[in-house]
Image (tube, helix red, strand yellow):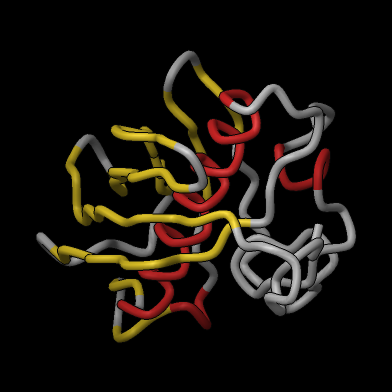
Length: 153
């Protein structure tokens, strides 16, 4: 674990349950850029299960939401020529549970499909053992001063 993730680089004190490096009880996802995609490899622990060998749907949502949010904020940062990412929040988010997600190593992939001004639309998926188990599409918006998430990283 020598390479710093996007979260560790831009928000090392973030306490978000899904992506906060500073949350010892959180999922602590680690996102990395690969070309136009954002990749996160994550392995569930027994307490993340819904039932035997199946990941909880709420955890699936958190994984997709946080990873997609980071893809959006990095693309918005680059488009705006900034050296720091804007603080973004989820505006809308639609998760599709296609099949049971096993309690096994997972690869989460996100791709920004639209970006303009202060918002980005992201499509993402979770894959396990060569099969896509879940997908999502969401809109993520950079917040302005006065919003509770403003300057959270």
